[in-house]
Every structure is written in structure tokens, then in C-alpha cells.
Amino acid sequence: MEQWSEETIAAFRKTLLKWYDENKRDLPWRRDHDPYHVWVSEIMLQQTQVNTVIPYYERFMSMFPTINDLAAAKPEQLLKAWEGLGYYSRARNLQRAAQEIVNDRRGEWPTTDAGLQELTGIGPYTAGAIASIAFGEPVAAVDGNAFRVFGRLLMIDADITKPATRQLFAETIDRIIDPQRPGDFNQAIMDLGSSYMTAKNPDVEHSPVKMFDRSYETGHVLDYPVKTAKPRPVPVDYVALVIHTPAGYLMTKRPSTGLLANLWTFPLVKVSDLLKDDEQKTDLMDVDIVSRAEQAFETETEIPVSLALIGGRAVTHTFTHLKWQIRLVSAELSTVPDISLFAGEIVAESAFDQYPMPVVQQKLWRRWQAASKK
DNA sequence: AAGTCGTGGCT
DNA sequence: TAGCCAAGACT
Image (tube, rainbow, N blue to C red):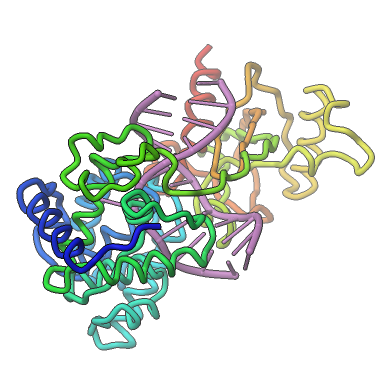
């Protein structure tokens, strides 16, 4: 990898910050340096694009204007505000950290990189971002942009998917960051990484720092940053149970840990759980799926139902590591059953907007609506 | 160290 | 389409 002289570092800072001063994006969380504003935006922006975050951020700040409002909010209200944004543990950890600050620290923020990392949900990147932007600490904020920008500028050959590599980048950037304007420096790197130095279609020719870009000079822009590919999502078959009663639909709240924690969906049964140990999934016809789902459902709930398969292709929903393929089966009940043994509620359609539901449930609902209107 | 944890955009 | 990719943290 390249090593920059003090002169090069000084020139880079000047060039980068001049460009930033003239071209920085006007984003809702850049109106001030309030740590609460910086923090909420940084959590939302984890693995999420700016354009997706903006409306969530605006709505969130109107619902929870201060950290005290967030600390005191009902968890279900918070989850509703996060609905559709994904990585829902972020919302839970956000409130935990708010309570840590409000209750344990008398409302006083830690003001250092190290202190911020002690808060729930704040890791090395987010701590660096808050410390530099809100508190002026000259510390790197090593996110995907920093990996990409400095990986290319300096042609750093370390694999960024390996945890140990983060330290190498942090040490490298800590020597380059402008100690007078660390927050602006880090944000300038982010703006650069989302404009001229994107992953797929970079425009280095017009980049303000192209003179500093060793990968451009040598024709290896797209070879950086170095990373190993992630495994493909694993297909998993499910059956969704659409139980309609005069009072509404049977809905379940997912467990408080794991995928889509605490969100509400139609009851979902993994098809492999319906099979005997020696049976192969491909041996079963759809009618078998229905009868077995029925048996499993009544065993668990004692709710008498007669299920019918909703035809057509499965609803598919892909997560980072899983690909759910869901077939719908339905039952129309003329009376409201006793669900006291069932971990869920019967929810009127008019009350759906009060329950946080993941996107996959919204897909199932649309498919059910389309099928039931035929 | 390697898996887990969402969603939408883009090619 | 299928496969990346996007301001990561936690276990």
C-alpha cells in the first residue's frame, strides 16, 4: 500500500475540505451537531442508504424530539417507527442506550470515542462518527465509505471483510484526518464515497481527489477495496396460515430475539418442521402440506380449522442470509375461536396499522388480498 | 472468526 | 434474474 508524506497529507486535507465546503449535501441531520441528532442518523444509516433514511429520520424526530422522549417511549411505538427500515435490533438498542444516558448518566453524553463505545448499539464506527462530528475528537469513522475511499487511494490490500483489517484502516486514517475539522473530514469521505467513489460506477475522472488516487493512476479502481464474497441466501420453505374470523385475522408476535424480533406476522410454519425425519421435502404434494399444517396447527393451538391451499407461486422474500419461499393456506371461520392457548391475537384489519409488521408480512397480505378477491 | 440480522436500489 | 451493494453491531 501507499504511504503518504506529511506534505501529501496536508494537501489532501485542504483539497478534500475545500470540495466538501462547496459541495456538501444538505441533509436533515446536518442542521446542527447535536449528539442526539448525529447518533440517531448514524444508527439509521447503518447498512442503509441516505434516501431511504431521510423520511424515517424526519418522522422519528417528530415522534421523539429529545433523548428523553426516546428513553420513555413504548417499545411497540418505537418498533412501529422503525417498521420497514430493517435490522430491528437497532431500534431496541437505540432505546437501551437512550435509557443508559438518561437514567444511568443523568442525561450526560460520553464525549469520547472510547466512552461512546460503552453504550449499547454503538460500535467502533458509530462512536468515531459521533465523537468527531458532535464532539470534535480527531478520530477516524471507519465505515464502508472509508474502506472504499482509502482502500482505493492507498491501494490497501488487506481484506476488509476480516475484523482485524478495521484496525489497519483506523490507524491509517487517524494519521490523515484533519485534527482541526475531524467531523467535516469524516463526512467529506462519506460524501466522496457516495458520489465519485461509489462501489459500482465510480467517476474518478471528475473526483476532486483523483490526484491522490493511486488505484486510478494504475488502472485498478475496481480492484479495491479487497473483500471476499458473502455466501448466497439459503432457501427455506414456509407455510403462512391465513385464519380469518369475524373479528379479524389470527396474528402472531415473533419471539423477542432473532430474525424480525417482536414483529407481527401471519402464523408461519417451517415446512421442514412438518416432515418426519426420514421424509424428503420433494416427496410431498401440496395437499400433504395442507393436511400436515392443519395437524401441526391444531396440536399447538387446539383451534379447529380446515385449511385450503392458495394456489399460484410462493411468496418469496430474501434476507441477507435466507430466502424464504412461503405458500399460503387459508381458513374462513364463521365464529371467533378460543385462542387462549395461542401465542397471538385476532387483529381486525382496521387495526393493522397499530402493529409493527415486517415487509414479508406486507407481501403475504398483498398476495392474500389478490387471491381472495378472485 | 464467522454467523446473524432487513430492506430497497441497481445492473 | 440473481447478485451485489448501502454511514455495522452483536454474539
